[in-house]
Length: 97
Image 1 (cartoon, rainbow, N blue to C red):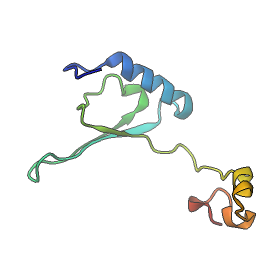
Image 2 (image 1 turned 90 degrees about the horizontal axis):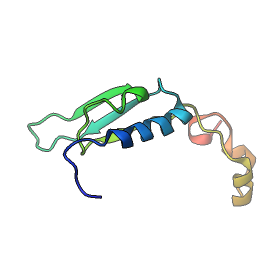
Image 3 (image 1 turned 30 degrees about the vertical axis):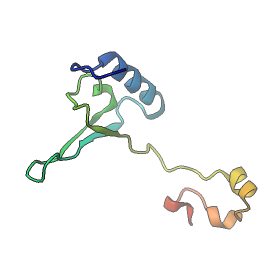
């Protein structure tokens, strides 16, 4: 709890290892830090998960992990919600054929 000036590399390694089990160590992620002032640029860094621990990141950066694949609809949940099967499709962005 609290703010530490130095990055917690052990916590980053834990995060990277956990994400790598789902996405793989070569999965590219992006760290984004918005500009603090209109005259300053945003900071955008893209790198593979395996480099998360050693990448120089601001504590104000947001880590974006893009999907590794298109999500498949949950037919059982759709049925329980009363959504007709033809409405959920499959393997299509937005769930539509």
